[in-house]
Image 1 (cartoon, rainbow, N blue to C red):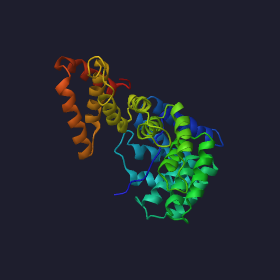
Image 2 (image 1 turned 90 degrees about the vertical axis):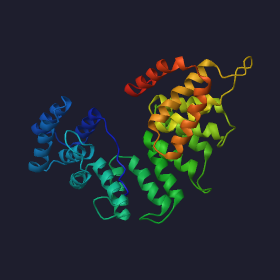
Image 3 (image 1 turned 120 degrees about the vertical axis):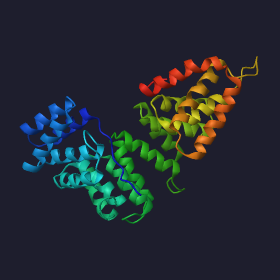
Image 4 (image 1 turned 180 degrees about the horizontal axis):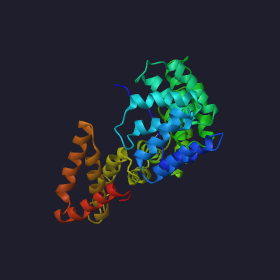
Length: 321
């Protein structure tokens, strides 16, 4: 089943943005709900937002109720109910809700698929400053879904969002330029946008820089640089980076004096491949990870494992390896 694409908001950022977008001062119900949310009292917070959403027809409250149902804050998640509230909030002029509604309409989840209507909602959201919506609109133009196919226009739309400083848009633009057909492919520009986003600590951008260096896309192959960027992304818990960084450490240059991997590189190979083993979902990926770990096991002292496994545990419980 297709699923809608949703942005993830930090709670603090969410409420700052919500109140910043409001034309009037927030109601007493919203202030009370925000305080309850800050204290992680989800029941009281939900009650406050629902009261404002229903009694005052407050669009910001309606949007937040949708987020409660979408993310399962203090209650079972219900995308179907989230859709209902996002639609109300979208009609009330909340740009993030308009974007989410567009996602639902593209995917046909809990509503009839209508990508042409989704395009209109993306345009409305972008006009109100939700610039990543331009890249979602660009995806429709890239494939001719609900609009006339026009990859060049797609790039222009997403580039506009990237130039306005939207970091997610910078990554999506890079992906369009990296994977698109010859009419739009531009490795140099893709690299530039990934690099800008990577400077803002976005792991997905760091991952793609790793791919470009490892595979020599638009530049000579630089495995050391590829490993650096993969490891940067992996350190931020970006799952797709675990296997490639572990593989690059295992297949890295050997010590010319011993003909073997350095102790540090061997340990890093084990650490990242162990992380990949925990995250692997696809059978082929699991097979590849297990084969590499078996090779590591044959040459790594067994006495290293307890300490290294503890580091992997620490990585997943915090954010650093």
